[in-house]
Length: 584
Image (cartoon, rainbow, N blue to C red; front, side, top):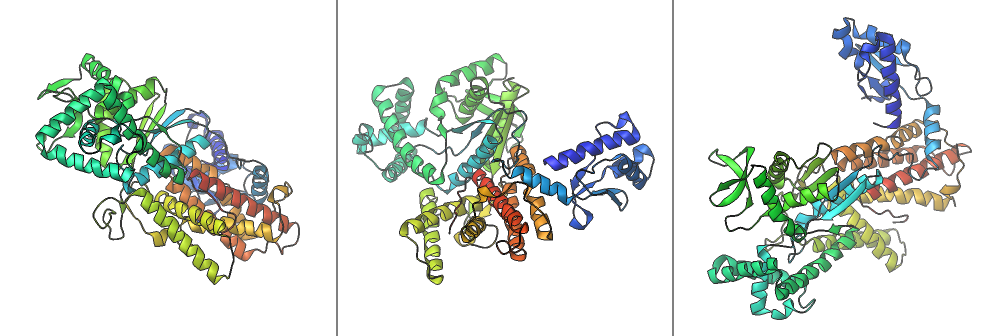
């Protein structure tokens, strides 16, 4: 709820009490944005909900509320419409005052959270010895945007990269490399990441088909867990090799993360099992230690257990996730823990969350949130793959976007007969290409699959990053053309006269509501929708209202609207992890 809506809600609540008595304190006035601008800006629907309780017609109730309602500083005189809707229209002078008030504020008048807290966002999470592929795109981009928004709101955010850096895969990879490329286990950067991935695949094939190799690999895992010096050294080299490659992607995407992989929690796993045993939750089933869950059954309809220790004494993902959850609550002191993974892992999170709650490990003031997302599909509507059927490397996908943005820009410059330096072209192509990929992902409701299309995401028209970057650049073009320094525009300069100015002004003042809603529901597409609508409303204002040619004081007022729009776009896009350009 934005500041204006909050003020109106308080006034309505007071009017309801004044009209009907203290018993009605706390009644929700059901204040919503008006569905049609001709009815005003807000609509209170409370009269209809009180009709039965009061035994009065809704219009009579609405009349009684309006009689006690004082919103004269904010709105024109309230109007009652239909069966009893209370319509409220914001005063132009109120809008002008609000915009003049935020003009000098670097946060555009946006408040920070009333109760900041420690929040953890767990995202990206690639596996060591494998390249990041298109499947890591959504977790990385969505998780980063959520972290940015929470940080902007004033929360203490810990961005964690829970990489897969432990377990059986290292036993088989080290065993295989001892045979075919022992140098890779003793010398840094002896292999590039592509070769490492190839060796991993071959090691997996041997592990699946060769019993002797499989046993040797298992023993190698035991040596790793025991801290054998040569195995530990080999493991560290393999991890560092992958880490360097991941960092190239993170730098390209401007992603900040703290790595805390599965290995970090390895010393804590036995304690998880011991404590579950003490709590009476553990049941032995076919040699494995399990917790049986409510609401989960197998195909035969039998209760489905969550295994926390395998029959051979080993642990699995659930054990590590339980250990990490306890650590984040007890040591990191997190009050909300957000896991950004594909929706296919929904059951896993529901299961280990349930176990942690049954064990009494989740305090009442700690919130656990799984943020699921759908698949990235090719234009054929199927999982996006290379021609050979492999997952598309994330680096290749991003490079292709930048390459296409580069070609589009060169073509546009040629048509416009514009000369630009190669440095300018490369920088614009990089920003546009990366931004296009990020925005195409974030603008979708994350719970849905979406079709990945370079042509659509790089389009200068429609709900795309290039469209909004172009609007931002257009505003800075106005400042260059008029030799205007936006920072030197006078305070209290906004005067709203044209209809498109009023529409733009009202929309600029809704940003706090949007960011607050994303903070709660963790749906970045809502911010994307807002920025797209804002861009459209600015273009309508730009098309219908002269700016540099306007007479004073209109000229300065419209320049302030331009500046506020550009700053709102820049702030909003930055919360999506998108950089802006003053020239395109």
